Amino acid sequence: MWREVRIFAGMKRIYVLADLQGVRADLLPITYTRVVGDILVGIDSIADKWSRHVDGEWYVEPEADYLAELYADRLAPEDGDRTMVAANVLPDATLAAAVEALLPGEQIVDSAGLVVARRISASGPAVAVEYPHPVRRISQLYDIFLLNGDAIRADFASYAHGEQQTPSDTNTVIGDAGQLYIAPDATVEGAVINVKTGPVYIGPGAEVMEGALLRGPIAICAHATVNMGTRIYPDTTIGRWCKVGGELNNVVMLGYSNKAHDGFLGNAVIGAWCNIGAGATASNLKNDYTPIRLWNYPTGRFLRTGLQFCGLIMGDHSKAGINTMFNTATVLGVGVNIHGSGFPRNFVPSFSEGSTAGYTEVSMSKFCGIAERMMARRGLPFTEAHARMFEAIRHAAEEYK
Image (cartoon, rainbow, N blue to C red; front, side):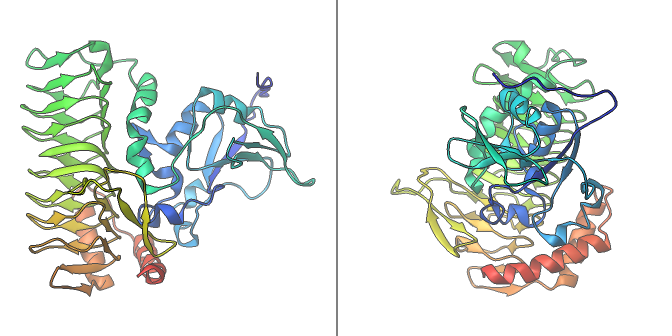
């Protein structure tokens, strides 16, 4: 049993999400544009999960210096008692209690010998406290979709309470209606929703149009849109302000991205501000059923994953034209624009544009203009800070071409 947590009135502990396990490079290109803790898995981000489980003042420690400007309002004060928490670890109640119980100078180490949390002390090295339970962590890109179904189930209990609406009579709900949450201002009409295999969460302002077929666990986050006739299979999260159509299976879309038309995505991670054109399809299974290799940025080569299913990994602000076809386990960097016939190669570096006929580098002025127009459609500004971040990413990405 973990030690009693003593919280003094008016005092909140400081917690800082940091890359204690050194996974940031393995999670590129998704972590080019965000801290590890802001990766969406389940209904919300890793950072959101920790703030729900542990009461305190939560901050982040950006893994890349160029992210600090955009995260200025979430940087921790420089001095004082603080607990550093591994930003890639997904909390549960037991782990949260262990983190809260840490004393100055102690750190939690899991069965793999990895540090989960460390409470800073000025005196000497940290004393290890072994944590005997399994720890869920995002260490590779494919962990995002592999853990997504379990994360939705775990998150659902936190979100599926309080005010909600009763499903309209135009919908067909298969299974226990208690496993379906529809926010009061969401719109869901004429859909078939199967919750026998897992819960379905439909967030504030979201819309599920008529003819949509949903089989849980699924999260449709705030203001997302599911178009008519869309088929969504289990373990899928549609992030805030995304729009989807066609067929999706075990997909995580991080936010503000569109795959609004027919075409298949499976076992995929799609960054923010992406657009996938009509008819675009990504393979998630090799014809010979052999294990999949996936591009790894730190090593600069394709590494074995041990997986049979792995689809498209797409960095922020990347685009795919109509009828684009992607081979199994294709990785696109940040700001990539793919179009034309044929299969693009399995790794396309950031700020590249083209097709099987060849690629050219996208100029920063062109990229920023497109990003500014796309973000303006959602009423969000593209700032000088964004421009500086992408310029830094361009320089950083040269290392991995």
